[in-house]
Every structure is written in C-alpha cells, then in structure tokens.
Picture 1 (spheres, rainbow, N blue to C red):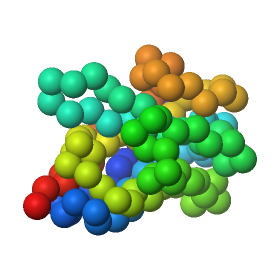
Picture 2: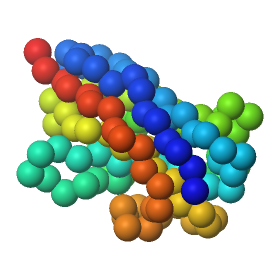
Picture 3: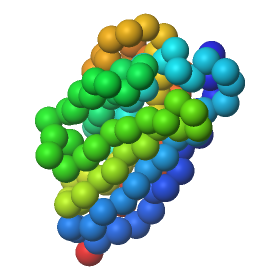
Picture 4: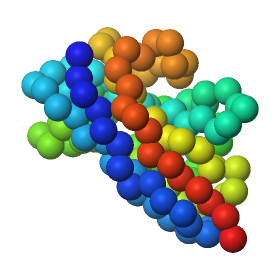
Length: 124
C-alpha cells in the first residue's frame, strides 16, 4: 500500500502544455506499476498512460498517444505526466494510480491505490 498525491493541475488554454506529478510515500514505490487515469463528470474513467516498475515500458490510451509522456523516478518516488497540445476534451480530474504486479493494465479495477486527483481544465 502506498499513499499517492497528485499535483500540477490547473487552468490552461488549448494548445498549452502542462506537467502533472504524483508523489508516493513508503518504500515500495518501485514495486508498483503506475498509471494515470482521468475522469470527467458523467464520463467513464479513462486510462491515460501507464509505466512499468522500472520505467522501461510505457503504455498510452488512444487520447494520449503522441501528446502525453509518462515517466517515473524511483529514486524520488514520483511519476510524472507531461501533456502537450492540450484540448478542451482533456479537461478532467487526473488520478495517479498504482498496482502491485508487473503488467501495465489499462482498467481502473486493476489498480489498488489511488491519489485524490488533480484537476486539469483546458479552456479558452
């Protein structure tokens, strides 16, 4: 079990870039596959990006491919999400999630630990 805290959200204009960060407590961060999900009101929770325990493998949802980059720093117990070319449809509450295991899953129920979320709003 890890504690996850997201930060970096905010209000930006379309086309802008934004960096999100997720900080983890505990000594087991490196044993967790990490991912970012997002959810807008009235919409399904959506997989955005995931990264393997060592960071060697990444996986992206269709909406994120080519625009977002996930990374992690196990020495700092952090996972980041760099977002570019933001669009209004990217507006959502972005969650950091972790799971024990070695496979980057793309569905929320596979993840056991979640942060509180950080709001990203893309609007002109």
